[in-house]
Length: 95
Image 1 (tube, rainbow, N blue to C red):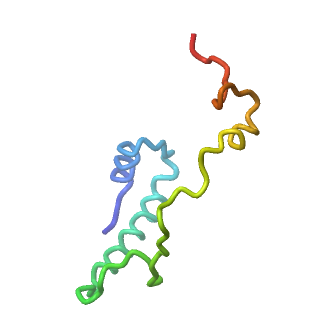
Image 2 (cartoon, helix red, strand yellow):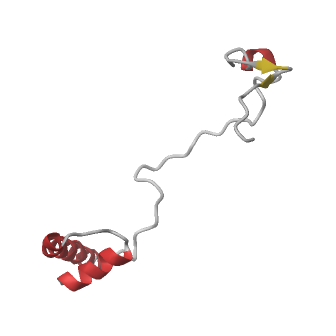
């Protein structure tokens, strides 16, 4: 499939991309090349290929969903610049 300057101009307008007129012709060639590669890929028979989510077959390790550390307010707020009653104090930003 070959794209012309007017088609590239329309695509750029729809994508809200400002492409100078001097770059429309080279861009048309590049996009036509990309579409050519896509046409070649469409010719490949993939009917016996299973869909995959990764290039390496692996399973993620599972762990128990348990609370390991918690209820340690003093340690959590130790690095806070200012705190009160176990909460962070931040400057008021809305009047």
